[in-house]
Structure formats: C-alpha cells, structure tokens
Length: 505
Image (cartoon, rainbow, N blue to C red):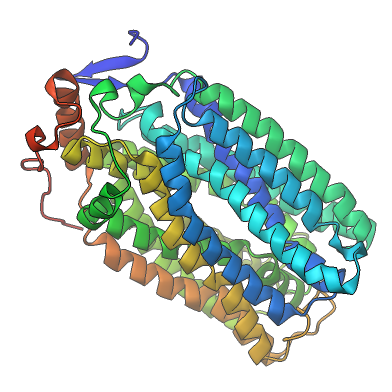
C-alpha cells in the first residue's frame, strides 16, 4: 500500500482514496440513476402507446420492484464470490450496464408488436432490466467499503453524488418538460426515439468513468482485512444478517426514505402537482432549475455535518427536518390553485411555496444518498465483528428492503388515483383540477412521505453506528490486519468493547 493510499490516524492506518477516484466512482450511481429517471416514463409509454391500463401498469411496476428485491441477495452473493483478474466490482458494473441497455432497447419498442406479444415482452423486458440495474447499482454501495475507510473521506461521496444527481435530474426534467414534450407533442414515439438513446449513451459514459475510478481499489488487499479475511460460505449469510443489528435498523429506515424520495420524483405525482394543481407542467422543469442551488446546499451541508458529527447524526437530523417541512407542504397545497405559482410574476405565495417545497424535497431526499455511504460503515462493522468481508451481500440487503418498501410507491399511486376515478389512464396536463385530485396529490406528496419519515426515525433510534463507534471499528480492523487470523473463527473476537454507546438524539 503506497503512502498516498493510507494515512495513520493515531495508531490506526486507514485506507484512503485519491479525490479523483472518489469523484469518478460516484458516477456509477449516476449511471444507474439516469435509468431510474427514465423508468419514470414507462407508465406513460405503456399506457399511451402500448395500450395497457394505468392500474395494471402501476401494480406491475410495484411487483417488479419486489422481484428486484428478491433477486438482490443472490446478486450480493455473486459479487462477494466474484474474483477475476479484473477485480470483484468492475466486471459486475460492465455486465449490469450492458444488460440494462438491452432491456431498454426491447422495453421501448414493444408498441409495434402484435397484441398477444405486448404484455409478455413487456414483463420480460422489465425483469431483465431489473437484473441489469441491480447488478450495477449494488456495486455503488458495496464498492465504497474498498474505496476508502477514512470516516472523513466517505462523506465526500455524498457531496459529489448529490451534486451530480441534482444536476442530472434537474437537467433531465428541464429537457423533458420544457423541450422534448412541447417539441414532440407529449410522450409520443418520436419523444422516446430521442429520449431513450440519450439515456443509454449518458449512462454508458458515466459507467466507464466509474470503472476507471474503482480500478486501483478493486484489489483484494482493500477487501476487509485483506488476505486474512475469514472465508464465508453460503450457510454463514443468514447468521450474519440475523446478528448484524446496524444492518437491520438501517435497511428498514432506508427503505422508507427511498419510498419518500420516489414519491417526490415520480412523474405522475409531478404531473398532478404542477400540471393540474398549479396548471402548468412546465413549472416542474422551472422549479427544478430554481432548486439547483438549494439542493446542492442541502447535500453539501449534510455531508459536512457527517464529517464532523458522523453519518448517523446527519441522517437523523435531516429526517427530523423532513417531518416539519412535509407537514407545511401539505398545508400549502390544500389552498393552492392553478396560476398561484408563477416565476414570471413572483408573489409572496410563490416564495413561500418554493422555500417549503425546497426544504421538503431536500430533507426528504438527501438521506437516501447518505445511506449509500452508511452501507460501507455497516460492512466495516461486520468485518470488525466476524472478520468477514461481505459488502456485496450486505449492500443487497439494503436493496431488498428498499425494493419491497419502494414497490408501494407506484402501487400506492395507482390505488389512490383509481379511488378518484383514474383506473384506466393517468391524469394529464389537460385534466381539470378537482377536490378529489387535490386530496390525492396532498396524500402522495405530503401525507405518505410524512408517515414514512416517522417510521424511519423510529428505526434510527436503534441504529448504533455513530461517529465514536465507527472510530472504534476502524481501530479494531487495523489491529486485525496486523494480527488477525484468516479462516479460524474461533480465534476472532466477537464483540467491540465500548463501541455501542447509549443513543442520545
């Protein structure tokens, strides 16, 4: 290990990455996130061009996320067992991106098929997409444990990821709402012929850069305690999951946080909020542009707090902020009407809504990014307890609970809209505002995320990996690298003395 890759902190030698390595590897999350953004338009493609009903599609989109969660543990084991001359992570990243490209080529070209083939091919393409997406996305969490073990470096990932994600999603929303939709007259075949290839190219470029970023660290010496890492058999995985309390608490909290973030980014919800309640879908792109700086500040501030007070502290504080801002957002929307929100003629109401919406979105969505880095803390905790390096499997446990809980986002949207008369087709910008649609919008953008946040806060009460605990974990891992056994579990210490302090929020 070179002097650039490690640092002695007290008596603890930490694995450190170069700044450019962290920046480039962060782009792996961006590479998969752009597909997540594009996936939001599947409902409009499948109902508008393929001819499927809105309620059917919403339920299928939910079930496919559950399928995603079910296969994730197997993908985690695959990553943990992968050992090639190109490393553990890079082959999985490349394979995942290739599979995802193939799935989108099929998924967005089924409108020309015969009626009997549309639904089977639609379902098959969704399944293949989720396999490819999960392969690449899982590495985002798993690879961070090898990239750096320095607690002050890990939040840098969140800063970069937050900036790139904000710019990418904001730019994407502006391009779609303000350019592509007006130019092609809605979600037409011409719209998708331009939109989908652009998504594929951008994702591939970001994926290649991420492969370059992880290349040096995709090496056995950075996995757990290196050559001394305890071997793990398949039967060991259940014992690991059952005994890792930080994993259990964080995965459950992160699942509800992801549900909330999905509701804020769902295109149907945005259509109801801006296209119907405020009467102008183009505002979704405009407000995304207005909120670029606030979103970046939310992300940067969260990471800065995490560097000083620990990731857990920052995560909890943001959830608490989300509770207050979501309640205020629901109150404002109850009195909102078409024409109230205008950035050409700014009023006090516009300022109040923009501030509250920025806070609600920032406090609600930022913890999703923090959880990516906290997964590396959970992996290190497991290494310190058992000597095992199972970052792949542990990371996919996040995806399992995440997928199951977040599957209720499209399902919930479908159920709610069906209840107010939109079981066959989703509302569009031409749909008039009704009291039922207003309540539906408030429930989706305020009430459900508020409930999810309160549940997440409850789980975080029992998550023990604060700043002091993680410092102790890294000290123990450093000691294990110097003297720990490789395959003899009987000699491995099973507890970390004085590292689980009482939780004081």
